[in-house]
Image 1 (cartoon, rainbow, N blue to C red):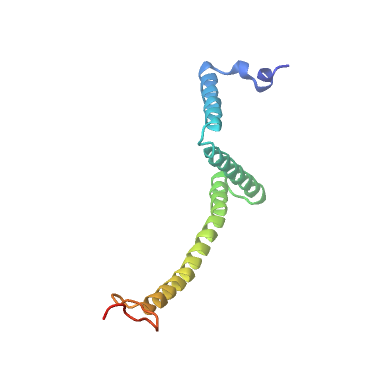
Image 2: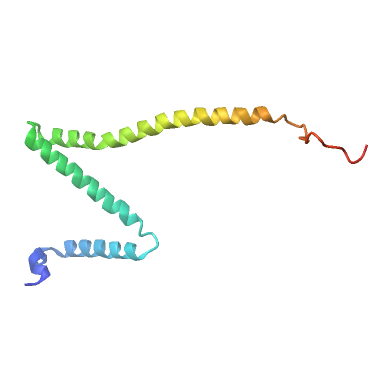
Length: 127
């Protein structure tokens, strides 16, 4: 028994074979290139969509929702962590920006523009 008979490649059309062959070739080329980090986006997107599909199937089984409504609800649930992260960053940035603003005001108060800063025992060399 070969791999091709298990997958059912014998029934694929020439266009499907060409398409999947090009896809596999591009993934291998990307894995060997310096931009292999792009594969993490590819795999991350697949994992994200599998999570949405899982949530959709759970919602479909537990509640009396249509398939469309369960997809919309699953997408909304999947966006909740992103919304929480954005809210956390916005609130943290507000605190940080006030702290940074106060620090800049204190630094600006210490310096007077166009006035040289001398030590207490400074004696000019030439009178």
